[in-house]
Structure formats: structure tokens, C-alpha cells
Image 1: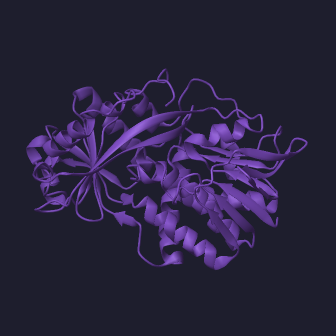
Image 2: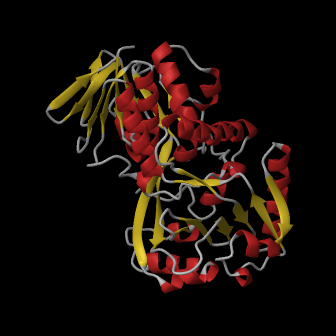
Image 3: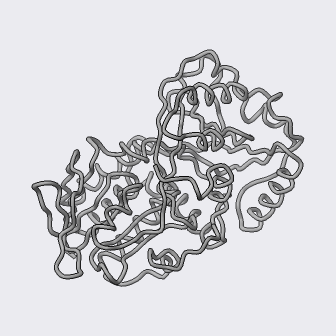
Length: 387
């Protein structure tokens, strides 16, 4: 393996580029946007929700991804992108609380560091939060959680990749076609430019199915929009935990603000966002009152690439050798493990057993296996049109 083209400069593209460069591969990265992490990777909640992942093998893969961030922080040095904080979770109804207890016990049996505690601990863990906003008697605390600064993560990976070997990055360069030698994919075309390679790695996120279609491959995925709203820095105490509450999720930002997400609001994204950022900000204010004292700093819509069964799409398919796919809904958490294993498969030319359940041509039925995606689908059903 001498040369590879990586399509997409998000977290997965950056991570596989880093590992390929370390292996001595000459990498050409092409990205349609004008900078790295300008797409979904720059418009994501980016919190470690490994505790929600099912089945057990997928939970274990996410654990490896989460642990991989710790190793990469040491390996790459420089400013960190992983911010360890506890995650506090609670339910709004008795039925939801019973389900939450069951998930918590399952996660503990799988070795996850979480515990059910009285809701009063919210005052200690997140003093910026209004304890009256939590009507539950119990909350779940996930002690080993973290949130990620995904754009910083991407920049760190690409800087390190450039130090390891020959890496070319081309921004503002949308792929317009694939080069073929018979069935084999041998490179990419981007308007008048072409690059040939031993492998093309499809990390195009929500556009991955379109890249695949250029080689006659259908990826079982859909595109789901998600809105995030970031506040300006809070004037008082900063938020010191990730809060997963009924109707809204919050996490801190690097400058002392709050980032908010709501699947209920995401379900209403139908071509217009009028008023939705303000509604999301109001929901955040009910949990953290100081959010109401500052303005919205930014509101972004990211288009999530969502495999139909919730599990990643990783590897080649027989009808288009030379084209390697790397698509995941939980890309930020999984990037360290998927980037490393994919680079190993590509450079060694041999399948890695850990990736066997995630091949793009596996049978995909209507049963969504990832519990996190099932929860999202409760608000954004499968019948939602692609965006």
C-alpha cells in the first residue's frame, strides 16, 4: 500500500488519515468544504454516550473508542479536545424511570461506571443547574463521561498526520466522480483534477452514499438533521456536567457557555428553523437559569449520517474493490478505534475480525440495534425524508 485518497475531513477522515500516514502511506485528503470539520463533525453534540450503546459488542466497540481518545491525547500532545465531566441523566415519567433503571443495571453489569443516586446530588455535581428543574427522585450519574471538541480533535489529527508522512489536504474540492479500472476503484476526480491511489476511503459523512453510488454501491443509510445551539459564556457559575434531561441535553463549551440539543426539536426541522433556536435556548434556560442572561452565540444544523440499523458501515463490497467505506452515527466517540482498525485493514489487505459485524453489504433489517438510535427514532421516525 503506497497511496490512498481519503474523501472527507471530518473526525473519521482525519483519524484514518493519521493512522495511514503513520503506516507510511501517502495520503491525499479531499474535502468539499473550505476547512476541516466544517460539516457534521463541527455541528454535533459530541458527548460520550457509550452507556446507551447496544448490543453488547457495539457497546464494547464504543468503549474502545472512548478509551482510544485517552491514548491519542497522550500520543498527540498539544491542546486537549477531550473534556472529562460527569453525565447526569434522569427521566420524566414513572415508565421512563423504570426503563432508565433497567438500562443502568445493564450498563453496570457490562462494567460501565454509573450509579443511581438521590436527585439532591445534582446540587453538588452541577451547581449551575436549577435543582427544581429535576422532578425525579433519582438520577443516574455516569462518572467516566466526557464531551469532545471535535474540530480541535480533527486539527490535532491532521497536524500529527502531516508530521508523520506525506499528506496532502485539498479543501473546497468536492469529489465529482470515481476513477475505475473495470470494477476496481482506482482514484477520484474533483472537477478537472484527478488523484490515483491503491485505495479510496469514503469518509464523506452524510454524502457517503452518493460517493458509493458513483461505484454502483448502495449504502443502507439516511440523513437526519440535528440542531445545536451554543450560548455565550455564562455570567455566573459554569456548567460542570453533561445533563441528559427529558426534552433537552446540555453540555459545557470550552469558553464557559452551554451547548443544547433536543431530539423533540430536531423532529420539527422541515426546511425552516424559524424560532427553533430560541425554543432550544428556552429549554436550556429551564435547567441552567443563567443561560437566560446571555445571547445565543451560534446555532448550527448538522446532517447526521445514520446507518439504518444504527451500526457503523465499515469496509469494502465485492462489486467495487478499492473503495473502502467508513460511516457512523457516533463518529466522534468511535473515530479512534474505527480509524485505527480501518487503516490496518487497508494497509495489510486482510480483514480485521472486530469489524466483521459492520460490513456495508451485511443484511440490514428493520430492527434498529443501537438503543441510542431507537431513542432518537422515537422523535425522528424512519419515515422522515432525507434532507
